[in-house]
Image (cartoon, rainbow, N blue to C red; front, side):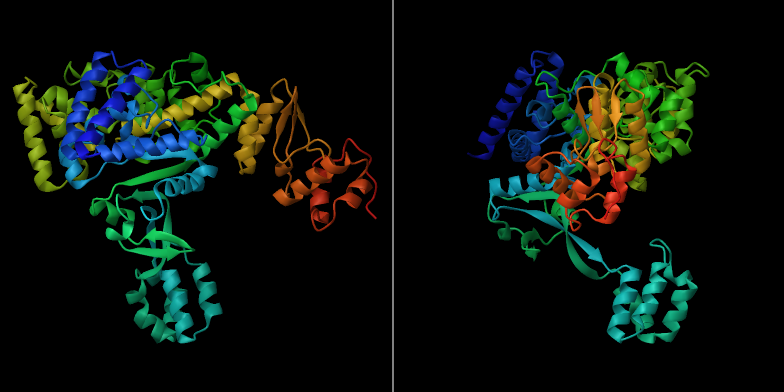
Length: 580
């Protein structure tokens, strides 16, 4: 199959996908599809899209839980038709030019990341390598350079110096601390001239190779025709880093692990109803009530900055949720954008629109340029710039390279003049766009994050106990576990202590009872839990504490674990006697 055949094949597959999803008859989708096809044909990237779609199909066919989308590719109708992404792009004001355009393809290749549940990423990598063959694909390497700490230790070993001394010193040296300002390090260097004289030369040198956790590159010929390789723990790895591979024109597929997907997947397993599927219509008022009441378990919003933003903004629809996720970024918060957005939303202040046309462009964001796509939209509508030109402008503003910056400013002001924008307004708009580039977020990223958060909130709204149990399986932080357990206690369900005769490795639901898992007991390992469960399954319930001690050997369940089980109430339903 030649390149032209591949392009036609990709187009047919995308159309079939859009028809299957019931959107192909929409004129917007047809027009957008044609625009994207023109760019992909010119950039000759059809094989990359086909390859990525094939990998997504492999993941789905293997029953591995995959996220709805990540990043700029969300804007692509082609990606939606090929089922690389699952969120309809029309409703979310996204820019395909932000993802891919002719000029960008010459300097920066498109980036499509695939989210999977965190405990299945290695399986996905193996799946890809097995499918395409070990001769044709491999993971990308990372390079671990000598840090000042590493170099100090290594040179001390080489010189036969006092390693215990330098080890104690470096333990107290912060990673971001300049060793030149550390008195203990300087004193040590004065006594060890070999270390002192070679330290600067060693810092930054290659110490070891590592393996990129998710990046894989697939070639059409055996990979050693294109790149050098190394062996790392028995695996063949591309010697070049991801950045180097991109500069060589190699397109990498990134598989990223996202823990929220583990929780969603296990929640659906606990619900155990094939008719229950995660929603892709993000408009249920009850879900936003859940988020505003308590964002515990809601992706991107459950921690400090997210909680504060939810309390401040009280998102009541998906657009406000997308904005909230963007406004928790440090740049936006430092500029007071979150407070400004809330003031405009609740009518404490009125948004200022320098031009009436901005109401249509920025109405969903309370008149603020929160997203990079907002900057592009303003340039497109008020300065008459093309999608390609608006992406150039976005990058010129953010990178502030003088030549590009000056040209973009000139083009923007000239375009505004042609579109009857007052000169003073045009200059003020440029100033606002320049400022917003310091904190504006990629809307496509925000929509992807918000989709994950909304779906979690939907599960929490309609299946709160199942969602709480799924969270307990995957949460390690003790404070968060306490919050989840309190959430269960506040429900009508009966929260039961760990129980040696009823508990499993993880917390589970039995009718209206929720039995806490052995994994919630301090110091309990998986092996200890399995030993208890296997013995109970093989020979029946434990009849007393002595019976438990006799049947579960100390090497599998030591004294400390037994004490912790007692304190957790795991023997409360059976007689407890003193251990012999």
